[in-house]
Image 1 (tube, rainbow, N blue to C red):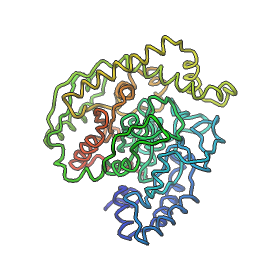
Image 2 (image 1 turned 30 degrees about the vertical axis):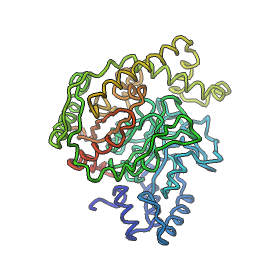
Image 3 (image 1 turned 90 degrees about the vertical axis):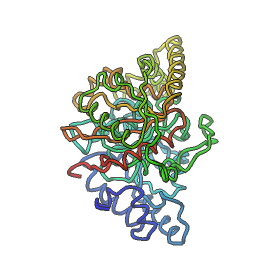
Image 4 (image 1 turned 180 degrees about the vertical axis):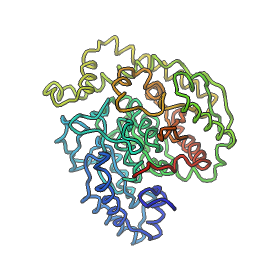
Length: 465
């Protein structure tokens, strides 16, 4: 391991802990010191829970020393987006409206990660209500690669902290691209699972029927270790899927790379409205997959416009349903982007809403047919190399273009993994996503892992941090 310890992979530090070469307490102290030194310039954490993290680390250290190691997450410091309920800890949901909320129990996924032995360092910055932009009172989260660039949203803090060596993995959520954008913008690997594959119990919602929770890490292997602890049915969430959960990390071993993988390629989909550097990086990634033994299959991606329009209506209305009482009590505590979405959601008529849900069902069927002959679809994340902060108002005003490669796959509920596949001339990472049929996370993780075994884009770190 040549990188500084804070930039090691989750599995690397896990192996060091298992071998007794570093203790969970020492590792946690190192990370807390780094957060204190580095994060004031990045604003990725809204709350650092140092005392409870050290308590968890001490317990993990004692268990591991006594031979009771729970698995690869045991003793490893991670962090969570500030919309997961955590017993006795305040959560803002990125908004002044919820700044005094304290849960009396852990979200299911927080509980599962704790049971796996993970150390939770704190709560990560996000867009207000997981929508649109950071609340003005909480300040921007800063991209460690280049402060002029948007760090992605809404899971901005998750992407930044993971990229900048302020945690070894993180939790994010995705309703229209909120794991995929920050993963691409920060050069990390993020998994948006099949809708329902991870429990949403104890999580502030943006849009209940679209929200998906997934892990973000520095590699597909790290994400696999996280996801193995997270996935599966939850009696507290009746929408969670009951399908059995494989050991995603173990499934990476013994696989002959991407040999035999059928990758769907739609040249028009890949290139229309996408900048030249992004297209070139993805074409180079396709070449890597071909050399690894994948088969390229020409496909035609269904028209996405109706799906995107449906996603916007569903997001606004379901968000309005959640926030309605608090919003109507005091609108002044809400930032402008979320407030505008809530006003739209409250104003939609039943016919508009009905059309959105009908369009969603139709698109889900079209995407299911697309995957009849392929294993994964390769896709951009952004239509451009990142997004400049000073251009975000224009992007938010043209969501059809900006969300064109992300939100349709929230509508279909499809799983997707985002990973770095190049570097732009401006020094920003370029990401791609691999999208699969429902419950194909194991295949997506194997494909991403094979690519990362053959390339080093995921090992690049932000300069100066």
